[in-house]
Image (cartoon, rainbow, N blue to C red; front, side):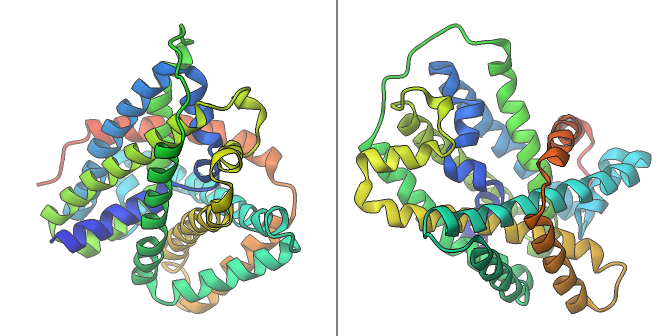
Length: 331
């Protein structure tokens, strides 16, 4: 049971983290910019990740939901068709952003052409997807322990003075917005994972472990980032932390950034492939077409699209976690 629970926890963590998490940008935006109150808000987020993430997976297991669509059908009822279509568009867009981020790592950190990074990532995702859910598990069994070790290192090596200031009202909304968006995205993997695992005790334990690990990584990054002046001026604030105090480990940090981006990318591919495979019998063709479409989309301008989609999906995500809490747990 413990091994299964650890696998679930690692997939949970690996699916939630991504480009914004790895660079520290999301953590600054949602928590660190608010000073000491951000620390309290991280504790709140951790509690929500533990409770709602576990509830989501147990609910999926009892419903025997094999995709996020079936979960949304239970939560949203008659509105689920619209929600699922919208979610597909957002998931495709966000996953393409992850692919673009992988290309940016190659270009900015390894000084290689971005398209080399894009093609390498697409090929690696293709190989991973050949193994299905086991491929996702394997990726996260590598990436997440590295991420935890790195977080432990920066929490020991860094830590600025966190000042208590009067926070804006938005600070108190941060835990709900942050957890809602990430959990709505993570369900594309967590729902089928919970259904395939079947052991509810392992699912509950995995949900708790995953939520605790997410809270730990958030705290570690938050304390390390708090030492940076002018936090909001950095596009990759975590890179500045590493350069200042762990310069000799910068190469490892680049590997971890890429690993976090890739784990989120392949999770998105998995969820989209599961959906499309319901309509097209040739699953290999679906996978190749999906990856090529994402490659093409990552090369064009999509930021304007995301500026519209992100806020709308944010509102939908809040409704999602409300319904996740409100709906009766299936027996």
